[in-house]
Amino acid sequence: MKIALMQETAVPLDMAGNLALIEAAAHRAREQGAELLLTPELFPVGYAPAQIRAELSAEDVAAVRVEAAAIARRSGIALVASLPGQQAPEERGITAVLFGPEGERLGQYQKVQLFGSEEKESFCPGSMAPDVIRLGGLNLGVVICYDIEFPEMARAAAAAGAEVLLVPTALAEEPQVPRLLVPARALENRMTVAYANHCGSEGGLSFDGLSVVAGPRGEILGELGSEPGLLVAEVGPRPASGAEGPWYLEDRRTELHRQWI
Ligand SMILES: NC(=O)CCCCC(N)=O
Image 1 (cartoon, rainbow, N blue to C red):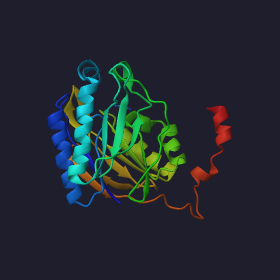
Image 2: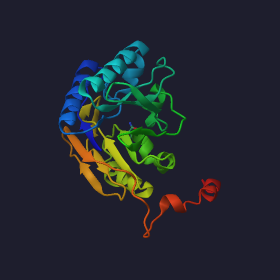
Image 3: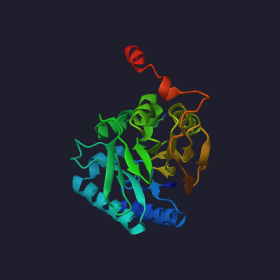
Image 4: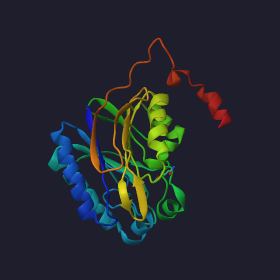
């Protein structure tokens, strides 16, 4: 299955402009044969947690969610859009919604590991493990940004059966995450990991870009630099564990590890 990752600069609270960038990327992705478009964390509203908390009502979020579904339907491509939750501002988290190519909601995940004081003061953390959504013959999982920096999160997705982990992110000035951690998460879980970031200056932050798709042996299937772009990569099922190790998933001594950590 071909997937596409959008790397662009959003404008905080300029939903019309941000959604227009997503729609353009969705049509370009479809033209290049992709069946799914992964977009960065909170891209439709822009990455500005405190501003979102203060200025975006549940009605505003509902309208953006309807438009994201409509983009999936108009472009005929599955779409992972990261949005504030549907609850009241004081109760919502950071979510990622998977819309199918007809705009239907296929799954939703709420970010478990919130990053820093601004996110923690602006959103509520999720407490549900990432589940698996079947699409295009593959088991897809979703986590968000800081989640991928905790090995437990990718392992939970792999243990649930995820073969391709989709990660909307908003990473600024930490290039070792896409360069070191994302390929490591892929290798240690024999799972493809796709990591789609903002780029450029946004909300007072300088985003790294460096969006990347790492394959199940930690190999780089595609990557971007610091500029806007669309990364298209072919992803597949988890390879069977062969005669040659390592067998990280099979060899885990989970009960023992649980006693230690
Ligand atoms: N939005 C986020 O979760 C930002 C994560 C940045 C983590 C890092 N190591 O800088």
